[in-house]
Image 1 (cartoon, rainbow, N blue to C red):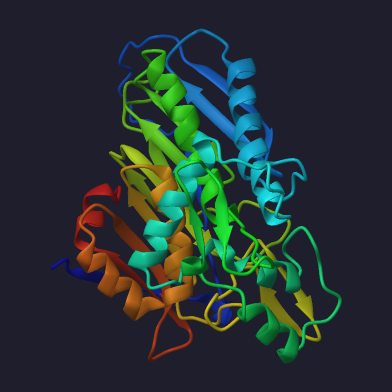
Image 2: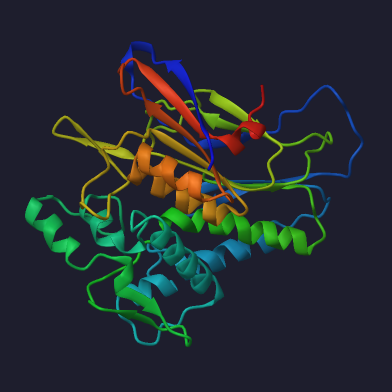
Length: 347
């Protein structure tokens, strides 16, 4: 069984904080000679990407093309994507390799999390104003109506790539896993080019390997969880190093809106139909690949602290770092992490 470690952090003025991950190319004082490194940046999936790798070649065109392919497969905001066509019950829509990979991983994570991760949550995401269609008014009746056709067990993909639904009103949302998968796609491309040192970041999700341009391990920061829809940089809660694989952080502090004096978070509980009100403010996951990390980070936000820690203890391939409010004092935060996470924390 994994152990869990707790660190109390003072919460100034009782402000609720959440966090996502960002990276910094921080190095020690050593200056180890290394190959030329390239840096690329751009926009994708309504966010930005930053990529650094140990090769002088400019692969921006190829990488942009790959990211476009991911968008054409999995975006619910792209009306011509495979996912969108399946959501419209287009019988000619057939899953490509990207869709198959993400759908299967999503179903696996859904089963492991007892449905707290569920790509069929899309109607509720739309209802609460975070999807490709927005509702003007959320009522208990509207929520109950959506819940009738939500559930990962109600969809399946056959060997020919056809999506089968028990209810034609069911639609999919891959947003909580697609950015992580896109990081993996770019990482795989770089590895196929013989590149072993790289850091791929898309909207805060990260795939990385090897060392930076100074020959030192990459250092990745977990952002301080300060509510700010303007995406300002408020510094870092912790720094991680010696990472290899995927890392993702989920939190609600940068994607929310306020209505009638209440903050509406973008993470929706597929079991209740309502935005989460759980006791995890930020969940950072390290996994062998970024797609897995992305899906579990979202899952843990919905599951809550106790269930997340129980599942972490059962899954040796992933490690977790949770920022939670203290159960005994609302002015304190507790940082809880699995025992294997300790080796990544940079003192």
